Image 1 (cartoon, rainbow, N blue to C red):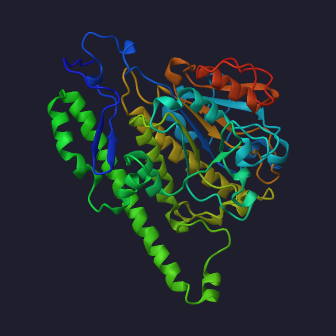
Image 2 (cartoon, rainbow, N blue to C red):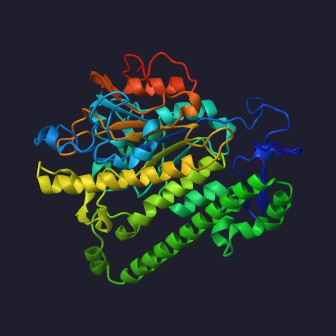
Image 3 (cartoon, rainbow, N blue to C red):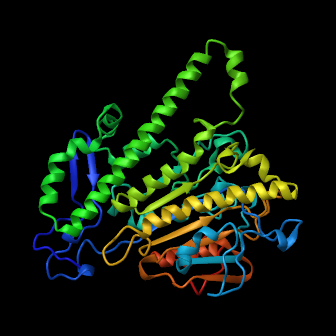
Length: 452
């Protein structure tokens, strides 16, 4: 590792005109002749919870194990990834898959709110798994936690945007809304000061990097070659995210203009807008999901937050996937009635979402973070609160853990076949322990899961 004679704080910020740019980890953040573990730049644990509604096509449809496209074959380290998870192959050594998990959450079974809470009703929800972790490590970052989504959760089906459609709840039983607008997320990450100052980003036509150009050049002159390369790559990532956010804003503005024009004829407007449609064009979803992932990646890289909850589609979504040859709406399609053709389309959707998640993992694996990468220092949970979407069953739940856990997760890759009907809360309790939070119970847990 290159150790510079000068060192800068891990919390160094570049500021200008309502803009704040946090930096990625640089070797210059380690004082000369000082062990990394003894500095503020020592690797910190990141956690992320990535939710996909409507479960996965597993062995519990009427078509039996032959139709299973989620569950890995084999056990232990000899497991082989199935169709939906095939994209994870490059990161297989960091993957733990589970069989026989169940979430017996009564009235919230199948709703997003039950996934991180394992609670029996929306009245008693909180705090959720992510918020307990945020309570432990959130004070060390600008944002204690970040809640995002790929589309609005205010949809006609599946609680119609009520508490059941949220993921994160605080100790006060208050939901933290999922933000699906890229511009708003971008402002949270890069805005400086109060709400008014952060909103100034929206009024700027130039790149935010233009406002910190002088500081950037001054910093680059003090860095070694490897750090300059890391900083240049970071600035390019920020700029690309900014371009995509601007493009998304332009598309949204165009859509808003069309809707405003249509308001002259209320009946025409009513006929043009499908019920439950998200507040952005359906055919942009293939750009929206990767964009949200890119913003999450930047948040981790700049250490703005270490806790993220991301809903990749709403429970009541009418989202279509024409870009992978599936013009059908996701939620209606999820009630597949054991039709092989509909099941095949669901497999395509579930595979696409996993591929987007894997692209995010690739960014984490390619981002240095002290002695290792961001993926090495992260615990990511991916799954659903439903098993068979046609029946809304909650057993077995499709669930995986990915990452190195900052040295706290077993590596090598494995499929864990647990005792039948093992509570999902057991996994939550285990992850709390991995995050350094020792508690004896979480919701209906009966213990921890060994071997992770």
